[in-house]
Image (cartoon, rainbow, N blue to C red):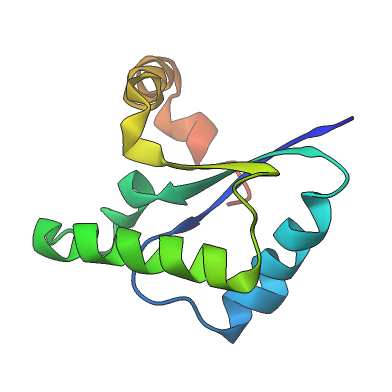
Length: 107
């Protein structure tokens, strides 16, 4: 059984693009794989830095995940910022990734 790790940024309500681009696959994959789906609240801070909107947006994405058919009995759903190692790993990677190297990345 393969492991799947993916998430969607919590920048507001999800839309059809999120469904057809990601959620539809999440729903299918949860029956065949060990899945971990997260709500990417840390990633959202780069384009939606207002903390007062962040908590509500996280709730909206969670509700949308469940309404779309992600089953918490089959998959783990979590909030990115609830895992402190995410920030720790970011810090270490940030110390070792140089701007010249980052400029070569595709996304």
